[in-house]
View 1 (tube, rainbow, N blue to C red):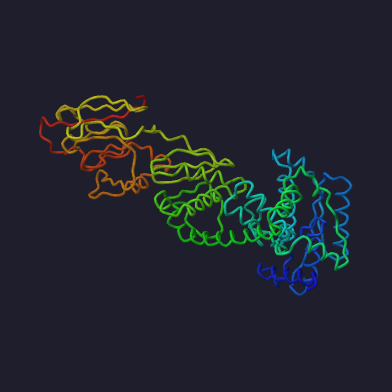
View 2 (cartoon, rainbow, N blue to C red):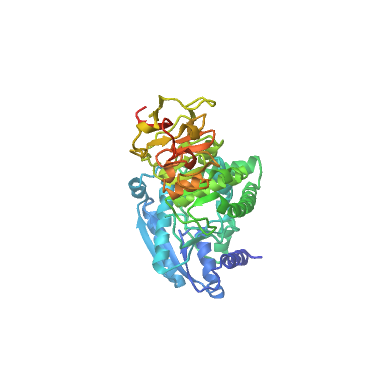
Length: 500
């Protein structure tokens, strides 16, 4: 089959798979002038009537190659005119863009600038997609670059035929469309030759200062010569296999997501940015480690809007950090996102975890009395807390109303023995004062509107009978001082003060 027919057939099939065929919509075509993007434009133009699509050519003049870059822009403009297609050409300085945004990599800055430009063109004309000329060779290079950086499945998947817009992140439209992923570079060159069409050579592709160029011109040829002459095809197959595995894992995560996600409300729709995402620690820990990593990645993306700066080492750090039910604290992540692990929740949010909690962190469960002996008077210094216990005769206490939320009165006989001070644990239940039955402590905190990030620090006074006092909020119904105590009965006052 002639290359022209082969390429057109693959592009037509890609249009059908993408859902763009027959919609009568305009597709923006990113054209640099090279063989790949020129083939893309020629093929889409040849298919325009049969597939019922309109085209708009977009070219960004990366103003760092001087006259050569200007010639590229003129070539693309003339080509669009010849084909009778509207076009947009803009000239920008990638070095200035890189400097203004403090981007360390020239390649990354130029890529962002290019995608920002194409997104603006697509949004201006209402195009649902931007087609770019990435080929199977580009796919092989991308996968190899990701391997060198230590990528996981998302990196091994490489590029997909259609994908959400990469930059700026969070755009619902356009999508990126890569109909040449099953075409190699030699075929794009042959395609232009068969059509007797010219194309431009980009001298920037030979600059060894760029990592991708070194992979393309040095590493891949060496691997092909010394190890596997079909290494490019092998890398493309790896990308396809990783994509299938990833699709399966995503489906499994979608099934588990409603059980994992505590807030915002669970949905398997495309993630929308949120300032905070809270995952339940117990349902998360019940998943296979591969799904745990994917859940953490999805939570990060939901807060940040994209995963551009999230690397495999960050995922490893997160899973290591939350391993073991006793691990609590905070972990800083890229783009100003923080992960906060509590006894029952994994919280992702923008910025540092709030420091407004009035309760100092306990060092762990603190014994206030012998397990077999009722509590006795005294002062306990527990890190930043100072806890005082005093016992009085009922007739000497005219008013049993606590003066503040950190003071409470108890009946020692009802309170029980083995007093300890601790923070909450999974499964805690509490019978609040005035209630006939107990309830989950989690629900009590919700009812009392205790801020989520305070709940793991609220001290709990616990005896052998259960939670006697949620310090700062309410004592237990069973621990209260009865109204009909006879004279001479003891009552106990416990007071919490900061500055232990």
